[in-house]
Length: 350
Ligand SMILES: Nc1ncnc2c1ncn2[C@@H]1O[C@H](COP(=O)(O)OP(=O)(O)OP(=O)(O)O)[C@@H](O)[C@H]1O
Ligand SMILES: [Mg+2]
Image 1 (cartoon, rainbow, N blue to C red):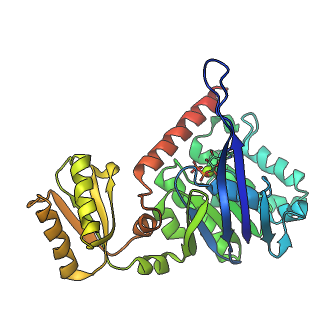
Image 2 (tube, rainbow, N blue to C red):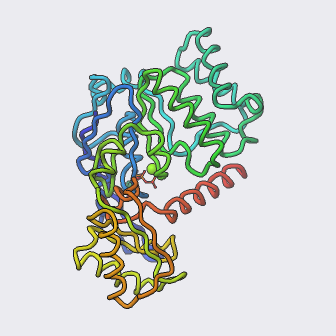
């Protein structure tokens, strides 16, 4: 259970001269209240800088909230961080492996540091190497690993101590589908064995597939919590994607999106730049009438023929859209993956 606040005070530096800007306060966790049930996978979904990592760092006792309460299996984690750490496994957002050591040496070192009895450590290491498909890499120096293999080793390290609570910050960002699937299988097996997992993600399909419950976070706040299906049915209605032209001008798309909301046809409508300025709308009604109402508004706005039109039941993306007013889009994901690739390249050159 997390119920706390965390703000950072920063001062931006000017490039030239000695002018100092006033201090700026960032409310990374603006009163985040979350309860994760034992034996579930809980997904924290949100855009860049919304406070996911800060929440997980506070929960894993790596950062200290300014105020509030953190209880892990009933234990006051702020008062007893050392005890709390014994039941937590943490996989941080950026990998922290030593390039000179092999994967196996990392696992053995970690087992020693955590005083895991030798036999149990050997058993766990053998199991994790197998389920995370690490056999072929485990006796090579980690400096030679690809990003996906490093991530799998990170997860093995997080799981080595059989933690009651596993905390993962974007475990699969930038990985190919095969690597992600390996990680998903392992996480589901941990949950099915009674483990509790909290993870952050940018990938809607990942959260949909893995999480028993989801929280949508934006600007330091939790906007919605529930099972993916309950959140989707709460959105209700129909989701519509409209492409006015193959490459629509953003102003045109915006005008039609505004008209859909102003006329009371859509509860929300935004322009998705990642989809050639397509309009993504959530329409209150269902069936033929709802679709016809949308088409009528688009025609009246000056678009008798559309390039593309599709409709479906609400997705987790629509839940996100309704909660935050934006799309957790490809733009975010691409920026993140690119950042990761640059980071990895830099690290491999060191
Ligand atoms: N140590 C710090 N000092 C100053 N500001 C910080 C610090 N850590 C985080 N922040 C700020 O707090 C806000 C939340 O950051 P956080 O890392 O929790 O976001 P996030 O949701 O994990 O983002 P991302 O998806 O990019 O990983 C951001 O505005 C960030 O700049
Ligand atoms: Mg983060």
